[in-house]
View 1 (cartoon, rainbow, N blue to C red):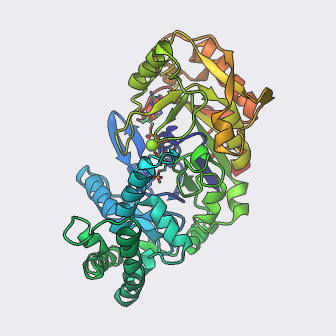
View 2 (cartoon, rainbow, N blue to C red):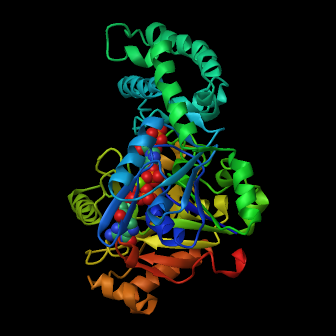
Length: 454
Ligand code: GDP
Ligand code: IMO
Ligand code: MG
């Protein structure tokens, strides 16, 4: 039985909170794509955990897997595990031997490429998290990557580095015209230094028995009747295939990624539940269009500020203020289709309380025509004018009490809002987030208990 958690919008929809919520009913929690660009927050009894790589199930003492579709920075991994141990948890993390390794030069290259793009008139800077995600997936596709399994064999690792590193040096020195020798980049492009550090990392992975054949491991767990929760990172509109390219991440957060990025068959993933996590408004960190962005005039900016402050909309990984917009249904329809949502979890309805106005974008106007899905090119999307429907706002209430009392305790206007969007994307609301804490989620359906997953 599987449940797949997918970001429906632009990331930061509150996936961590739902993975934590339903992780209690899972045996294994699997990240299937991305790397330490993710920032998933779990709040339990006021205690906050921010996880960028360790699957959020760690807070529930579940086995956490980083699947073959992930890119893994071992430095982040170990520091996160060590921090969790310092806080009294015993994270049990296993890493697919087929997952790719983020090496120090990938991070350097991510930074250089973003700087070059920032200087380019075409405005193609993505505003990446700087974690080396894109360059690592590039090397994976270019068949010059280093995989976790390679770290376990010093000779193979040396061969891989001896091939890749001179190429990376040439890119920096000859294409970008930048120095390596005598700069703080030196170690990142030194085969011997890299070999020494990453052999040691391989030894720790081996000593702690952390590497797995992911597909085989999950197959056996599934056959034994264990419950698997797939934890998507990022979101549909920044999916490399289905998002607004080129302002995307370099992996597939959409549900198909769960099968490819873990080695669990599509029929198994498809037999389970796929829950789209929705933020009740939009936030975006990084560049790219955002048709419903609240930045048109002072009044809109004041509304955005209010939502940003109340919702704590500052990047978990980078601390950057997130851009804010109204909920965008064309985006949600696209997300529901691409991943085949069986249910929705809508978070942050508490953040919208007490606002002066509340709008939902129900479609776009583009070149005099009304459309109801996201155009395939970013240039066309950027030219879309949102068509809005105004909703009644709701007052601030005691959300903790509402969470304890259940769905019917929500203000009527909130329920109308939720029911409208569920009908629009043809998926039931499984959960409603009214605050960051585990206890501040109203659960209508537990996907592990629903008929589709039995
Ligand atoms: P993720 O990347 O999708 O896991 O989301 P993030 O953790 O980056 O961002 C979501 C933020 O909102 C975190 O600070 C959460 O603790 C918080 N959060 C999650 N659900 C809710 C909710 O329903 N209401 C409020 N106010 N905050 C929430
Ligand atoms: P979670 O899992 C929001 C954005 C970056 C940038 C683009 C590419 O917390 O929802 P990358 O470093 O991946 O090459 O950056 O994607 N981005 C995210 N935005 N939430 C995330 O993860 C993100 N991970 C990457 O800001 O625009
Ligand atoms: Mg996040």
